[in-house]
Image (cartoon, rainbow, N blue to C red):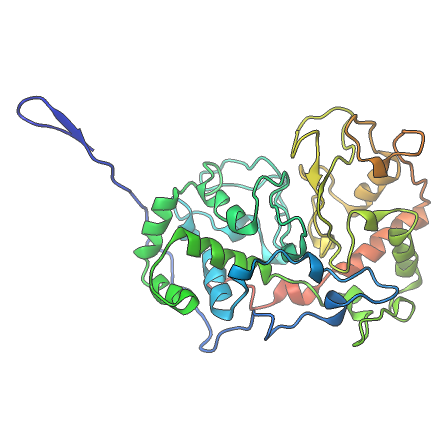
Length: 367
């Protein structure tokens, strides 16, 4: 606001304007908190210990900082924040608008819709097992140095949610149910953007998927019995995944995730530099069956199309990952039969965790 006095001099003062929608309700939370902490929701043994024949424990790749361990109260606050449309400028969208539980916290749209109807620049990445990404960096291009840094960026993005951090803090401070939630999580009613980041990160790290058919192949001792669990087709797919097809080289461990960015030869020339030279993060394949469309630009509609691409469609891009080249330097061709392609798809569908997709602990508290 600018004012002028009788001598003609002007003075300006900045105001933070926030918008509240009357139709938004308060969250409905259980009297006794849902369990989120590792103490109350322990990881299965094949996630914590290596065993012969398995894909390897991901626990050594856990990016949870010592200063932000998952707590029940912290993840509860994070869950409310994640689903609250008040975190956008016009109360139009929430984090969950682009990361929907039924689709493994991804989006069925190629590009997601922001608070004013604009489109995001890349496809929404699924969030399952994000805590086991060893590099600890986030977004397709890894521009965020940590999950705590990442979770605040969509809120500030002019297309996605459109709030400044000052506006965010003001809106939450003026929302009746937040002070008590912050006190339960952090010991005082003070609302800061650092605490918002920590709570959202705790909730996202609580999105662990460990109850798929693949997981049930492991016994209490952490040793897998794939032959006794999988169909013949799924077993062939598992052998291809870990062997000739080479999928496990970029989607490894029992969380099916690895660190680093890769150029996978989607195009002969680079159209999106990503993290540089056309390289993008390799996401977890957990619940990949329900996460179409695929790739950072959502170009593939089916898993069959994805396998066909890696089978015979990798382009001779100058930055192509060496693992996708032959010893002679040409793009790798897998020469899969139709039976083998379908087997790989069948095996990847064993990563689907129906419990995760409907778990009330992870669902919206707004009814």
